[in-house]
Length: 288
Length: 313
Image 1 (cartoon, each protein chain N blue to C red):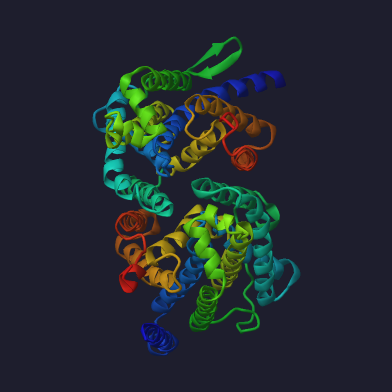
Image 2: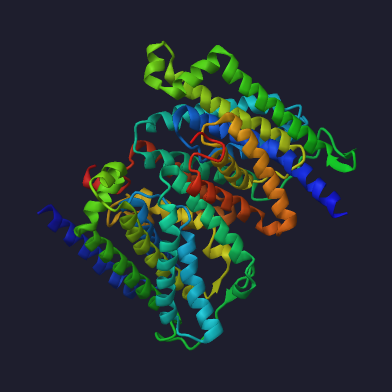
């Protein structure tokens, strides 16, 4: 009996982990390319969920059908945030950079609450429902789809960065902006791309999650923070690190939920961040 | 000469604030001013570590809550006078700040910021699940005789003067801190930490000093809040939003300046209160939209805050 519960929890934790990994991927791309932590990252995620909600309400699209649309919108949100807010503070003191994305976070959260109210909403026309039996472990189908979709997006972005010329250019700028500029790479364009790509990752994650999770203005707070923890654990800027760290966080959260206490599961996750920062500041999986 | 001019302005403002309740004593305006003083105090406290020492903490509600919970629990459980509770809370906050600061100051920049958010959230969950302090329900303070000794008053005017006194203490403390040798160390740390370290400055020690000063005044604010509203719960004294607000007030007014947070509170608190009055309810979040916009605009256009317009920086 206990074994069953444990297996069930592990499965659920791993599925959530795939989503955390995708959200963290967006954060780590932006950080890796330009050394800026986007404090509004969780709120980009929140926007994508509300967009999926709005498309379902207005156009009657299921969250999976509107996924490409939402992702495109988020790409634009990312690029616009870079052009309008980040570019002007690139050479400002670090505190001004922190405050800029921090202001964006408060603004977006407030705006969502102003427009939609603080209520929890769910999308009525979801793309899939029910659950399947995977050898004794019951898994909710929407959650399975979300995890699979997250992995597909993760691999796509990974291949884009490591296998295409544009991806190489992105990595070159991350390595050394001046040297990249001498090779004819437009650093500004790459920064904008990093922000677009980073936001597009949560665009996909948000759509996938909106299919079965609540939509509310504060949703970005938890997921944004989990992304910080995941990125810290995987090593800031590391893509493969983000994936494994995502799975670890998903597992830890799920296990802490049943082994310790559901209300304390985030305490465990936050403690991981503090411990990693204190003892392995480059991340558990990052290069020492 | 210029310095002299500021002293005169500061004295004039202070005099006006002393006389204010004698002229205007509608409870709404007194309440508004009390909030302004409280948030100026908290913003000023944040400014000590965030502005002067350059370490942006987003978990400062923790120290506020320590102040509020310590005095409240001492009164409720042991019948100890709230003024003694206030001092005990402040000492406790300083100790906690040292215990948390010592390890956390090894982390820099945004890593530090995220660590402080983590600490704030951990504290929130722990207090929410801690039955002895009332858990999520919170604690009501008993209504005692209304006099100075019991830190409870009928009417708002006495609270007004207590809040003004606390704020004055904080401002004076910051003023003398800025004039002392601390300022040189803080300046070195916030401009270039690594250089400061190579010059032999014990960075962690000075950051811990700044954090201790900051925690002390946050705790004072917490006890005042508890005695003013006579009710506390994690949602009101420990939310992330409180940590955010105190830092916003300092940023808006001008970080690393004595009067910046005061100026910030005088602009932001009335703005938030009136927007609530006009648009109804705190749930509309229009104040958040404005805060967010203001912070973005200031980060991009005027990182020195409102004080920048006065000092011309």
